[in-house]
Structures are given as C-alpha cells and as structure tokens.
Image (tube, rainbow, N blue to C red; front, side, top):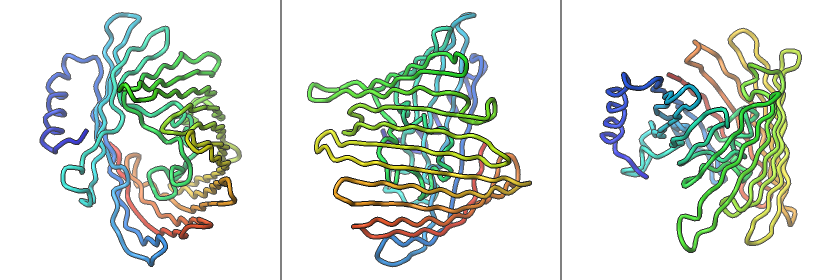
Amino acid sequence: MKLSYSTLATALLATISVSSFSADITIYGKANMSIQSSDEGEGSFTEVKSNASRIGFKGTHDVSNELTVVYKAEFQVDLDGDSAKGDSITDRNQYIGLKGNFGEVLVGNNDSVLKQSQGKVDLFSDLNGDIKSLWKGENRMADSITYKTKKFNNFQIGMTYVAEDSIDGEDATSFAVTYGDAELKKSKLYAAIAIDSEMKGYDVTRATVQGKLAGFTLGAMLQTQESVSSGAEMDGFLASAKYSIDNWSLKAQLQTANFDGGDDKSGVTFGADYKLAKSTKLYGFYTTFDMDSGADEDYLGAGIEYKF
C-alpha cells in the first residue's frame, strides 16, 4: 500500500487525539542518511541515501488484568527524495494482536520469525552490507499471523503463517526457537534456530548466535537455502564483531554465499560509529562484494542516524 504525506499526517494526528483513551502509545521514528561513493561494476558515482528511515506509532491497551491489545503501524520514509512519485512512503510492520498468559498473537504485515531470529548479529542492517544483499529470508509478509509463546527459562518459540490470499496462491510458514535476549541487555548470550517453508519461493534454515566477551560483541550465522521451483541450493556463513570504547564502536562483518554450480559470493564490511547522544550517532563504513561471475561492488560512505 502506498500513502501520501497527508494520509500519514492524518493517521498520526488521529493517533495523538485518541491517546488519552489508550493505556500506552508511542510515536517513534528513525532518520538515517548517508553520503557515499558507490561502484556497482560500471564505475563509481556519488549518492545520498535514506537507509530505511521510518516513522510510526505503537502501543498497548489493557482490556483486562490478563489480556492486552498490541498494535503497531510503521511507515518507511525516503528522505533522499529519490523515490518515484507516490512511493516516498511505504508500509513496514503493521499489525494488531493480543498478549496474555498464552503468549502473543499478531495479525497483519510483519517480519517473519526467521527474519526476527537474526537478533542484532547483522551490524550493518539497512546499509549496503545488510545480509539481505546475499541471502534470502529477510521477509516482511502481508496476510500473516505470528504467534510467540511466553519465555520459559529464556527459551521462546515463534511461528509465522502466511495465508494464500487467493485461489491460486500458496501459503507459507516460518518457525523459530530462540534463547536469551536479542538486545543482550538481560543476558550475555543470544541464540536462535529458524526455518522457512516456501516463504517467497524459498526453503531456508538459519542458525544464529551472539554474545559478549571481554568487551567484544561477537556473532555468527549459518544459513542454507533452496529454491522451491529450481532446487538450487546455497550455503552461507556470517561472522560479525564489535568493540566499544567510550563513545566509539568499531565494527567488522564477513558474509559468504556459496551457490550450486560454483558461483561463490562474499561481502566484507568495516565501519565505526561515534555516539553524539543516546539518540544520535555518526558513522562511516566501507563494503566490498566479490560476486564471482557477476560484477564486484564497492561502497564507501558516512552518515548520521537519529532516533526518536
């Protein structure tokens, strides 16, 4: 669904106007802009990019002591002005659901539990080094139902079901088991294993682990994927590391994708963040992709991210 600025403004103002009737509501967003030199195989060029900048509102409403309504409506906003007319505001996660002793059920447009299972291992999410550049599985699905159990001894089970939506359509499922806190605030270790079945034409299995050790945040992912139609397979590996000192965070990430037929691809990204405040950081990065049979790609950029 595509929205105009006036439609989005109306929705947000309506949300503010009913806030007094809601138990909890938050208006939030992120502006992420970078200036970078990009070379996608035909020479370098300079560009300004809006890296999944967004605005939205979310909240909860207690309908009883044991039952809570959960809702979110989030929109991507392309601040660089490069989008085609009418495409500058697009949908992100948008859902409504219920939460209680049974866990949580969400209905709408939402990230699959496999996508969610990556936690914070991808240190360059939304930039050119994002894992979606080489791997499948980073799916946000319309017509979806997501269920998650309550955590038990730090374990949680989640499942996403995507409805056919038409006579000729096909349903899909995503399943995940996670351990610990993806933010690494309540635990020093996070781990997950997740499986997609026929999700956007692929079967995917992904294992993820991340933890803190001697000032470092270290992460790794293993992925196998298979095209449902062709049977073509890929095996991939990702490793990431971050070291923080004072207001600086130094980051590095390696990702591989080894396809049937010997078409091997890999990407390496190095970067640094400097925190100006809790809400604001400056960052720089360099990403290079070795695409084997395809054109190699290189990106060098610097940017600013502000969250509210």
